[in-house]
Image (cartoon, rainbow, N blue to C red; front, side, top):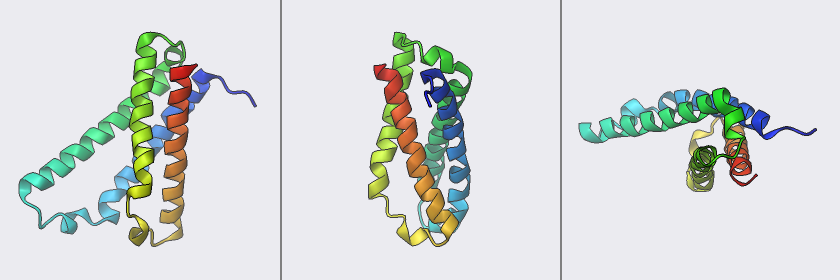
Amino acid sequence: MNISLGSALFLAGFGQLSVLVASAIVPSQLNWKSSLASLPLLMRQLFWIYGAYVVLSIVSLGVICLTQSGELATGTPLARAVCMYGAAFWGIRLSLQRFISVEPFLTTWWLRGGYHLLTVLFTCNTLVYLWAVFH
């Protein structure tokens, strides 16, 4: 099956937005309320602010891919720059995956499966953006 770059970018938009499902359950699964309670208020606030920026980046990249996939596939300098950012964003996240100590928290089959699915999504997102950068 041959898939066009524009279609791959469009599908990557859905993939990126689906990552938000995992993002939404992380605070409760990791019990952030009690785990972060011992930190000073500023540290707790910064933690949430950094998380919000990550979510905003994921939403932005996802929506851009869903609404501008054809434009991103054109290879214009701006399209390549946006795709380079996307490749760096997801590539860095993918490379950090091996260093994150998640094993103690993967207590059910669906959490383990979700973790591996996230790794697949990070890989696919990175590869699609790299395809767009270098096509």
